[in-house]
Image 1 (spheres, rainbow, N blue to C red):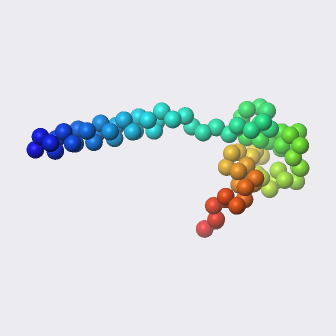
Image 2 (cartoon, one colour; image 1 turned 135 degrees about the vertical axis):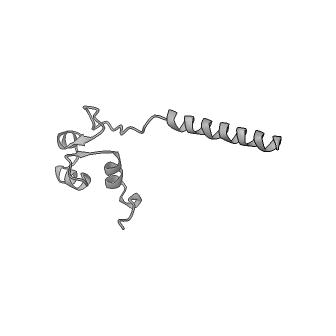
Image 3 (cartoon, helix red, strand yellow; image 1 turned 90 degrees about the vertical axis):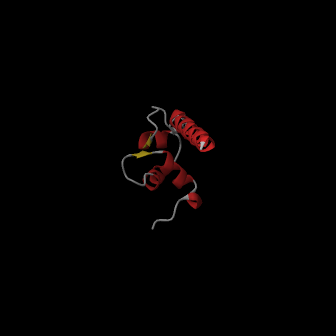
Amino acid sequence: MRKIALALVALSTLAAASGALAQAKPAGKFIHPADTNKDQKIDKAEWVKYGQPAADFAKADANKDGGVDGPEFVNFAHPELAKPKS
């Protein structure tokens, strides 16, 4: 009985520690030299200033919110990695 209690304490301690580690990780940031205002999105002006074709901006801005964020940039730059739409 004592071994079971110790095992449960050890498991709960391990679970708490792993939860704390997961919370301690900083959120991912979109860092790209074209994002000159550091808002983690590339707007059309930044895109063109960086030397990319203006027509490609509309293709990259998949959700049409006026900015290309990290996932949109990856999907545009590497379409082979994009998840298939269901």
